[in-house]
Image (tube, rainbow, N blue to C red; front, top):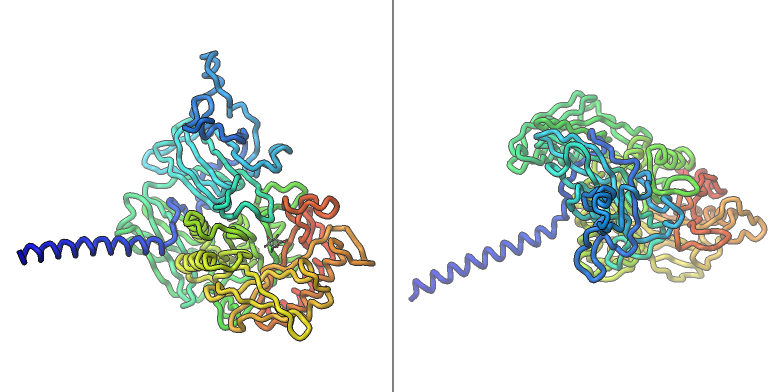
Length: 630
Ligand code: GCU
């Protein structure tokens, strides 16, 4: 009997141990942010077939292509993604009923949001079907992938009538393997793009920017060897060594010979991947290495050879860290002379199509016009065109996910979505020297659920990229003391951040007289760097009112900047700022018929690049700052 009991107890113990291990593994899994698969790091530099250009499109406001009106799946003649030549089918069968025909639908040039396809689509929020026919000649033994730079807000992707998958999130890349599905000759790629957000979305339903629904960044067909470099993370560590983390994907990933090289430095290092297809190396930085900085944006071609795959990127080597209340770049304290930017090109009718020329025009106005060294890319991950351009011309960047205002903090799906966006953003851009700050939120109301949500995102950032700084744009409390206002930072999230960031609009959204702004006090933890991540006031370019300096006049905005900068100069741990915002931008919330007409006018330049009076005030202030602390 005793022996039987003993055997039972051992078996029960084993079961308990298995269950406990499974629970630990699940927790550990939750501790690890989801990694996109395939990642295809530096995909924009791989040889590829561009699928940009002419696409057919057809709107589907009632989502007829997604399902029948009594529920159930969409029927023949409604499934926009079917691999059929509608005109041929209906010519052969006069009784066939199709209520769409993408081959003969209107044509748009992509990448582009749909609000410029035709005027009736400006405020359309819903489903639009896009189709691209393309010829391919897949090489046997190679692998093929379809990669999307970004589709806003969600995408359902079909190739030759077959569902490849779904992606949610309008600002980060995603890819589907199509090996064996892409055919020699003609192919039919159909994408259902849905801009509609819901209370569980990231960003939420209400923001202060134009939606810009559509396929807004490049689409490409990429071919790789059977085993390829899916990720290669290369950076200069604070220990002065170059760190390399390579991940291969494919049957030959394990035990594969790899070679890392920086030709310009004569650096070459050979190794072999482990059983999981991973190789990590640390190399003392060669003496000839020029560190990257805004004043000297040195970039190096780096390569990883693995079997038949030749992977490359262009990387700048620098370090960033916090020491006390200072931010150090390459070991030296810096002041961030910045400005905010939305992803919107210059021009009277932007469509969020960021070409290298568009990115260069905006970033040059910051660097040369404003004497800036920093840009906050608000409020979502911007195009890789922009982050690479910042690497090239020498600007430091703040990159963020659209965890903005009223997020569904209690919804596990919303958290999973935000974590995926953090991972997709960091894994796309962690080779970019320009990025020094990852932000996990903007102006989110303090609360237990929000603190936990953002705390998880901050932990994910540190897991994915321990070499950069974590921040978030926060709100402050306010009290009156000795006859003047004191702004109080009392956000528990600060403990999870390397850098505190505050959005302040005293004098625009408050009743403060501009003359009183310099007297406003700031009560924040003194041992942590502080950035003003937003400050600003609206002005309609060309609207002048020197007599009363009313709001929306250039004179008001100029005075607002004079007084706010005087206030900023008195804050000892203020190590930078990114005023809101470089350029007027489209926002459906801003509908004053004279001053706004659907634009947020806090830009220092108009939508067409016309500088306002306040531009020169900030530029002069930064020029002085640059002399004191580059
Ligand atoms: C907020 C918000 C911005 C918005 C700005 C404004 O702080 O972060 O997205 O556009 O203020 O009110 O203009």
